[in-house]
Image (cartoon, rainbow, N blue to C red; front, side, top):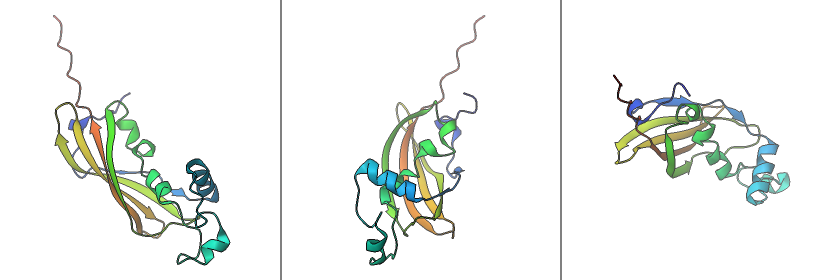
Length: 154
């Protein structure tokens, strides 16, 4: 695939913005069904009205999953070079609700050479339609070094 990037092709500060998605009832119900997380704050309107949020709240792990590199604009350019997803951390800064539109962004914050592949650290954020950052975190990936070019034959 053309346009592939390897560890050496990244610099600290590179940013990858992905298309926004509007959270729907289907997202909430599918995620609850898939994970078994059936807490009423995610699916029961009457229950949720009595909480500090006043309405149904998005699952934290649903929001975290929306920062997956595989679903980002970065994915197609590391298809051949990604070795492993090795670590993540996430902080939830504001709630997200049905009808909110969220936009993921990935920013390269560190590049560390290791023996067999490079370690790339990404700051990940989800921002809502009001410009509020609702999630801030970090992912770390092993990214392959560019393969050596074959020696020319004479």
